[in-house]
Amino acid sequence: MDIGISFANVNWLVVMAAATLGFVLGGFWYSPVLFGRFLPDLMAHARAGGDSPTGPTRYLAGIFTVSFALLWLAAAFLAGLIGPQATASEGIYIGLAIGLFFVVPAHAIAAMFGARPIQMIFINGAYFAVCLAAMGAVLALWG
Image 1 (cartoon, rainbow, N blue to C red):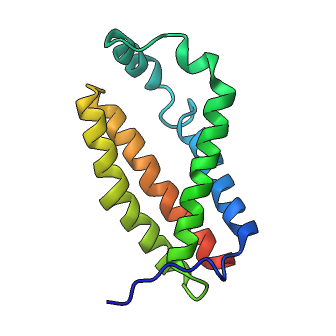
Image 2 (image 1 turned 135 degrees about the vertical axis):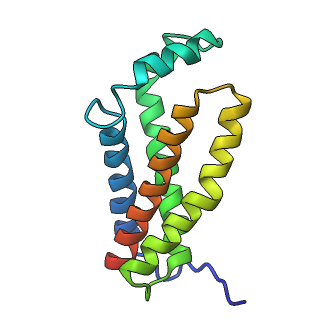
């Protein structure tokens, strides 16, 4: 098997663009336009389990900063994995495969043990699968 990760030919500007795309997609995904209308009820359920009602909004700037940094890290790894010769469909395939078979199961396990609502597992899992597929496409097309 020939699987390699090389950062030698990574276009770091495209990595930044892919991370930005993931961040913007997250803003859209969790807005009232898509799934944000479900979040107040789901967050109320989570707070009933012990989460602080003021915690997430109090630290919003830090949450956004760390979220973007983590998306950048994911995009950098994905760029190294995809490589400079990948097609858009290969980038989508690799991003989607990582999302569906690594990120979603890990997130689902953590959410179940954290007693999170099943809807949150689907909303968050779908976001990560779509986000990584979109970042894979950007990285393959422009990388």
